[in-house]
Amino acid sequence: MQSKKMEKALNKQINEELFSSYLYLAMSAWFESRNLPGFAQWMKVQAGEENEHAMKIFNFIFERRGDVELEAIEKPQAAWKSPLDAFEAAFKHEQHISGCINDLMDLAISEKDHATQAFLQWFVNEQVEEEASADAIVQQLRMIGESKNALFMLDRALGQRQAD
Ligand code: FEO
Image (cartoon, rainbow, N blue to C red):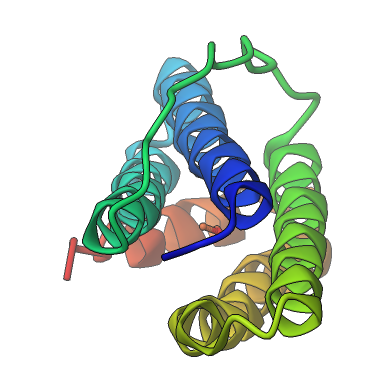
């Protein structure tokens, strides 16, 4: 059994992950509207991954005979100043999510909840990748600057991303 405090915190993380999915879907829609289908595809795949993160926690709560309570998902921002602005926001958001995961791990440790610690380790590792992949695109966009050609090439490359 899991403590109610831990269960509540995990439920909150389901909401964080679903909001992440919503945010990246909003970014995908914005990239579509800017005629950047590759960026839109990358964000759509990312939105799907975030949904999977939420479902991992959803399933874990039930495995431990807990209760899932879904809260309202906040409305995400709908427009950004530039592709760089959007990816900087995505990177910042991933840093926020890493902080949430660290807080969850701290709670699991303080509660001596070893099963939840083991479960959360996957998310700790995943966040390293999540931050690195957003940051890598931020760095590429900074290099590209105002070059339309380079943006077009990056759009083609990002469009290769497929769901796992
Ligand atoms: Fe589920 Fe991008 O963190």
